[in-house]
Length: 357
Image 1 (cartoon, rainbow, N blue to C red):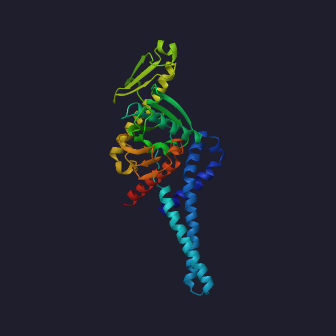
Image 2: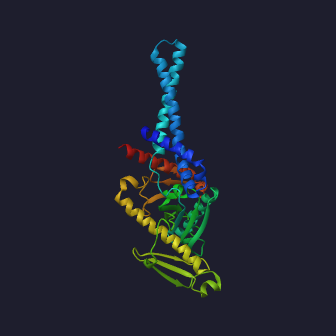
């Protein structure tokens, strides 16, 4: 590991020098690439240099102790420095192992989140809206932007399904653990006997794929235009502004009718379609190299039950890592960092264990 880090440090210094050269500054594409590499390497190199500083302190203290001609007080001080330096070296080593774990190539991407009501009828639809609110409040707190791409609302204020994008640095890295079945236990507003009902909602988190990463052949698409249904006024219902796109190779279908403009609906539908096809391609790759690439915290499968929200107890339980938090209202208001941090830590620990096995 340390040989690799020494080579990386040399490369880091070379990039640092190149970034100040006039020919690099004048080439925007090259400058952007080098700056991105430099930024990604910086936390690793800083930690490696901390390790080397601790190692030097350790060697100096050990050399003094090995000489054997120290008085008692000086020897105790050298021994203390030796132990402190050794502890710092061990800490840096563990942190470097985490920093050197292969980075998920999607971590810096924007996301598309799809939420669908499952078992429980209208109660499931209402909870789908609660989850939509939770994720968008989290996004707003981080300064990220969100946009509804497609929605199928119910009369009582829920969603049978809703798809929306979240745009911001590192959005996928934080939200990627949310795919799966979310279970809610609470007394519905329509329940007259006060009985607790259990409902489920399915969440899928897709890394947003751009046209450069995934080129879709237009001949693989079947595009239908039709009149939108539901609320929206005469304009929506009288023109064929709604769009249905079918990706023929895998029969993936996306509909969008939220906008008055046919063009805008088509753009939104293509954004969802591209991300679904990208996800399917990734799942196929993961199946081939599961031990290396598959997410360690749960399977990432949208059919896996991952979490329970128990309203009477004010409790959230994440079943993948055995995490229980009694701050349900706070979490539903978008304060999700404690949950996401615990999931990321468990994921890192599992990957480290696999790496060392």
